[in-house]
Length: 116
Image (cartoon, rainbow, N blue to C red; front, side, top):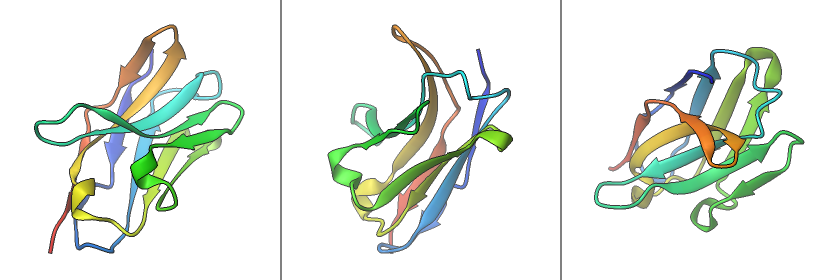
């Protein structure tokens, strides 16, 4: 298991940028994949971005070309760079460590609000 702490959320205007961080309590090198999910009020939690241990990334269709996931193994940290933010990106963003076979850990979430 791993404890995950997200940070970097906040209020931003449309078109602006934010960088979220997810700090893990131990090394993330052996974890199958690290990902960011989000959940807006009244909606299901959805995948935003995922980075697999080999460095392969994949993104939800709605964020492709705007968001970038990366990892800094030495700091046990995963980042989500979010550019060209839209009001529909407003949600609570969660970090997840995925061990495979449906097992994983979640962070507590960080609120992102895109509004003028």
